[in-house]
Length: 92
Image (cartoon, rainbow, N blue to C red; front, side):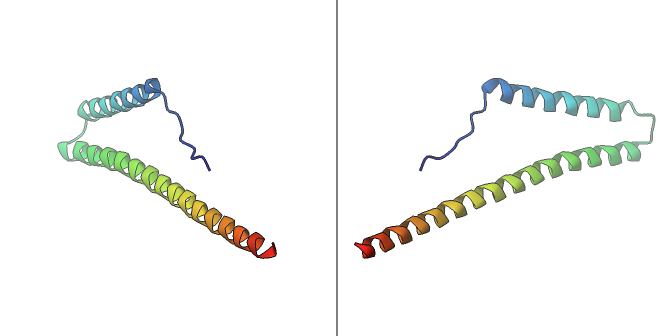
């Protein structure tokens, strides 16, 4: 069995980091220039940080579930192959 490893280009990684950085700077600039009290700006800043953290946490949770399902399926495939080998050995 060969394991599938997705190929991600270096350009894509640079693009995603740049995209995140630009978005974070735009959000910070928008909050800074907002005509609101300091406490309202702090509220929006905390909400923005929490949104970024929550997005990363959801992404990690989904990826962990996918990897655990893949490992479980590999174990089940190995058990099935062993069972089939035992059964075919008994028939001879």
